[in-house]
Length: 292
Length: 292
Image (cartoon, rainbow over all chains, first blue to last red; front, side):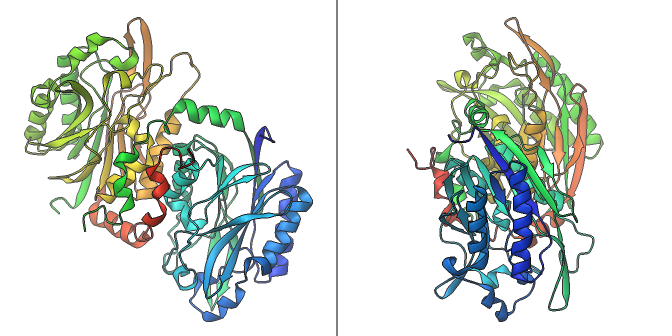
């Protein structure tokens, strides 16, 4: 192990629809997180612009780039190198004839270790992702970065215990989720923010590792409809407790550190992984519980 | 659907080491829960006596009975019939040459719908269950009772997202966990109660159904060593929030009701089950992430 501790940072900000502005904001906040000691720093989902999935509009496909051409990936991987930090970089990926909701993992030397393509794609009012993104084909991945072994899911993935468990089994020391979530059209009183946090706190608690999510804030108007994003970004500890939490409306930089050996010892001694029963988990491989 | 709502009850009490006393206490509290409207009522794990797994002692095997001979199963299934309620009944099962940590599901007419044998068996200081119990062979089960479709896990099962997800896939409307958990020998300042709750709140939140746990309270001295049980029994709603929660030291009866159609509509519209990716979950079928 290089670092004795995992030093996790999370940033939260409002996105404009101008990519240069958002990259500048990400730069400013990632630098703040690094100055506070963070070495693995999480930025929001699709922070290059507005959350365009609010509507189905073919014009938005022009926002996509191949991995090697994406402006956010270029800029933030350069920043990762400059600061010597790890940054998972969320971007809209064009891959031949299809498009993915992807994260590129920039290591502390700026090298891209690889990509993860969002496995679980939501679709509903205000969150029309199936129109844009093919379901990810990479499977769950974990990255041996310079500052720790990192698992990254993307937004809707965070609702699936299977994804978190898969990354834990693959050896993740921490799981990170770039996110874009907020209000639901036509349901002004509905607020899923606590539900959203508790689901992920459950992943932390069950897998006995830290979990962090970075969500956007602010209101965005796309095609005349306004949607608000509820922030509430957080870092949860290995017992599921919230160690750090951002507000609903405020730009934020969160940092927390976790002793890696202590985490590993807790996981070994608590022994949930020892007692798993893969022989009984076949039903998880079905969509309908085998009752179809 | 018979009942429009799920009416869940949870009882929490201190166990003596006299089976008749514990059955009497269970009677008293289950009746209180039924009087408050509960129709599916959860009693603690192995409530017939002290939590003997504190030590490894072959004398404790004499506590086991076959399903049809178990005093607690007989008494509480009669009570289920008397009150017209569903009661999962935890008992130490003797099955031929082996022993299981088992729950029998008493339906509202007193009939035993079947048994579930604890799949995940803990083992460590103060919780020496592998000495007594063979790992369960039934797999996860869900029961169509008179008052709702009920999934039941047992204590350590509650730490495994796979178990909760399996029961949800099998159609559970609520998941119940009889429990015995408390202090850890030699770690007087260690308290896993919030970690314990958060893990299960995560199951509720991720599967979008209520989850309830019934834990014992009190201190028990087995072979000269004293262990305390921290209660904190609870009922969590489908967003993971605690709807009802008992104290650490007090006898308690908790009740909460949930509209069954509203639960089903929430699950369908939130659509996590639609978006699961069994094709990517193969790693869950391994013990070591396939990295061995």
